[in-house]
Amino acid sequence: MAVSLREYRARIRSTESMKKITRAMELIAASRIIKAQQRAQAAAPYARELTRAVSAVATYSNVDHPLTTEVAEPTRAAVLVVTSDRGLAGAYSSNVLKEAERLGERLRGEGKTVSTYVCGRKGEAYFKFRQRPIVQAWTGFSDQPDYDTAAEVGQTLIDAFLAEVAEGGVDEVHVVYTQFKSMLTQEPAAIRLLPLELEDGDAPADGEVLPLYEFEPSAEAVLDGLLPQYVQSRIFFCLLQAAASELAARQKAMKSATDNAEELIKKYKRIANQARQAGITQEISEIVGGVNALADATSASE
Image: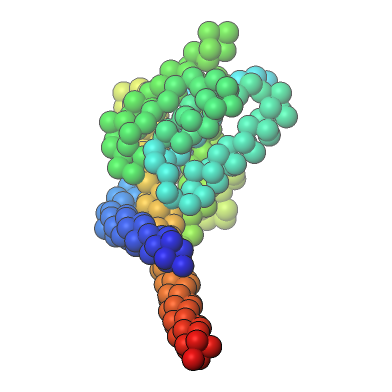
């Protein structure tokens, strides 16, 4: 009885310690997610307007820029997978990796070779464990990304896109990340970053006047300046969305872990109380049995 009771008390203490850790991690994630959500929301208008401006310039300038030119028969595609650096975030990283696997299967089905780029230690460990090559990986910033890192990632992908396929270049660039919908909903998404998808130059409706664009010093120079910023801002926006999603997933996972720990503590306390009561009953029974045996012995001797 005593050994069993000690075991349950030890389990209660260890579970209470675990509950304190998960509760602290839940509060930390909750305190960071507001700022991450605000950063993602603040970056959205700039990324949206820059995308619209670059798309409009590329559409109406009639300039064949390398970053907007579709290859007739693409043979290699780069896929940037954005995961987390740490675990304890539920199915956050696994959902992104599943989406990346689906995208990779689709690209390979189209006859394209996939070159993998990774943000986050979880994604890096996933591909290394399966002995699948990674062109380049960036780690250590998944929950607090900065623009300098996004610029480095963007420039690396631009260089790969501009390089010849024979020299390790790619014909397409895709990004797989997690969209932050709300505190309860985060969805993995895959987008094609390069080549830039142009707006459709549909005929104007009755009475509609098409905008006129003038480029100084030239359309080529404008695109040369805008397109790198476009790629970097889109990647930065994806990283911000992923950071907010990671923190939301971690907060939800840690709250679930804390609730489970509370239920487990209640269960262990109930079992421990039952064991203690059973032990007391057993001791009383032994005392009564001993008294009765002593009384019987005394009666027999008389």
